[in-house]
Image (cartoon, rainbow, N blue to C red):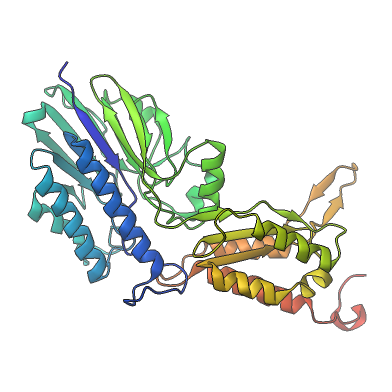
Length: 398
């Protein structure tokens, strides 16, 4: 069988904005990071010289991206087409690329002008005679019958969708795709390769079906991404190279534009404010290369209101100044209750409920979600600092 190599990338999210830091030219720093990461990915793909590139959706973070995001996408894909004129490119629209109303036009048609096969509003079956290949391209939306072309030597499926048995429920609730499929839907089509988009973490779905994950940390909860990558021993974000003849997949890591650090949590149980301050300082000092210009989270568990109020906030402000973003996640001791049977049961604290609601809530794309969560936690802590009125006044149960 003639060798054919495919590159599969997805969830680029150009135009993604986060935090308040700007570049010297006035662009949101994270937007610039994501653009730079995409450029590095294109550099690597050009070096690999594949026969076919499959883009599985969410090229942009919103369906109405900025002119800067559109221009950068056009330049990089044009560079790919110019450097590799014999390489075919097939692209589908993701849920972030797709307008919410039919009256709004899709920006994805722009890429047709440079010879990219685009499925923006409805599925397309694309024949590539030179490769003896048929590609079924399915954008976010209604899913057609997923069947291969019997007349083609190679059949590939590129689809932006949520796979029920694979994507964790927590993630599915945070970022919902319109297209939903099952493992059985994908297995029954006779595909040589299935390129999936939507889930931001590299994950095998079957022997020849993969989520390649996003190119950068653009999820609603990047710390979920980090924990999943650590559990699966992934070395970061990137794209997949797949040898169709041999059935072999290789994951290529794209060097990140910004380092994200989820520091080792601190337990403040039975510690004084001075001891917690010292633990925070030790944790920060052990970061290799320092926290400067990085995105950092430090969780402090089991910390009481009184101890939280006496933390060294000057030190914390200095950490926020040094890092691109420094999130101090203070978590109170978890309340427990005992059922009649005597088994302890955990009841979610108010702060946890509020934090999760703020992380899951739909917000405008230019709103800094982490800042919103930080402010919410700050307001809760300030409310807790007020003295509680007697039960006879508030009507609270004794």
